[in-house]
Length: 230
Length: 230
DNA sequence: TTATTTATGATAGTAATACTATTCTTTAAA
DNA sequence: TTTAAAGAATAGTATTACTATCATAAATAA
Image (cartoon, rainbow over all chains, first blue to last red; front, side, top):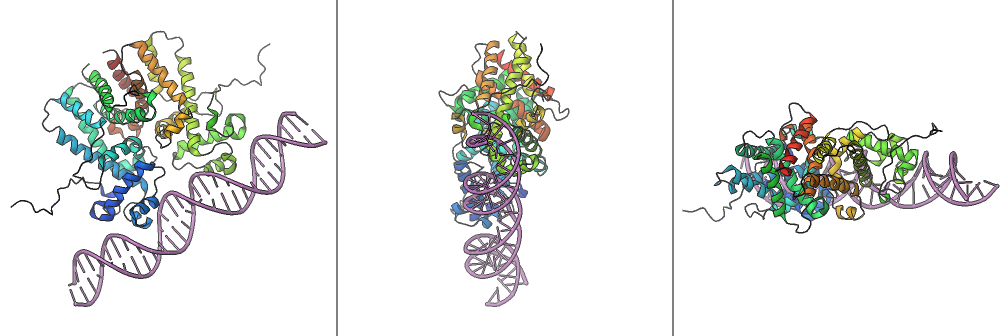
């Protein structure tokens, strides 16, 4: 007997419970809050995103949204954490058969620097839009005065875990390399930053003509492997 | 006959006039707006910074501030542009006798990654606090939906000029290097990012024990010269 | 089955933010 | 001496970021 057809296979990313008041994965309204947040933040930017506009888009009331999230900062941190958790999963999945650490690190760099396709395993989340949000809003999650408190509450755990994974891979390539953590966080941030610059402030990059993500990958590979294979 | 004693020697950074409504350099109130903005943004962060609080700190009214700057975003861009203009000047001054391009680039990296001392040439601006603002608020100047319009108005010219200077230096070290602009913007951004991480999310760096800026410089030198001397 | 908890909806209200406008006074240049 | 410009004082508006209350529908437990 196979699985009954009503059982939908879904990837569940485990989230830090102190990010929300009510778990958005557990109800239709909650899932809509995530779905429409991603859409609105992508469309109008985080600064002009408000719970009132979100509520209107969903067809609920402001108070309804506040029952799930204390404020828009926590909602941003939530969707960003979700993305890092999902990406960690993707990296594990897409590199599980790669044994050579150099090939593996190259694959990871490519994943980090490439706009992902929408993952059908996650119904209410469009990962390709989420990737765009990460590029232009990602750093706003931690560039705040409360960063230390947020860190104590483990809001950045998925991000740190990803950096750890990448840092570990760097050490697998060269156990003598002195800056694995810094290089890992640099790879992740520069992948996003160069993408933003390429599309918005092109003279800050060397990719203005093609506007091709492959060039960012080439730049990062050159940067990383020059350093660790030196 | 020497310069009369009432002539104070001051460094003037030429600013883009469309950033302000009234030139803040031309009056006491204007200078106070700059001075107290820097203090308040540093103390409480850009998000909780308002023109009302600023006016109260100065001892003027909200309307008074609005006569100089249309909104707080333009004020942020103003002080950030000012910083990049001042830094370009500093770099020119501090490297004017260095002829070897590698030494010169190393010096520039050190300047970019080091907390500057307050420059007495600029009465109302505390550069060491400004440097801190750049680390935690700098990217908010361009991570917005209006980045393209702002760019058309040349709001980011001083930043782009600095990147150009650094990119030129990279090419002087190795005229065959393929990514001078991207590497230049990477150096500048990573210098700030690693500083922020070191002090706020230390596990994302390898400098958590010492919390010493010299280690950031060492990391950047390793990264940059591995790439361009390869 | 009934009672009760829980989620949502509808509405109202408040303090703060991000402005705009007007009027008056002081200061400085013509 | 007149005029213009800069600043201070005050008022007012729409939006934001919430909190609180009450009613209702659906799920659940006694």
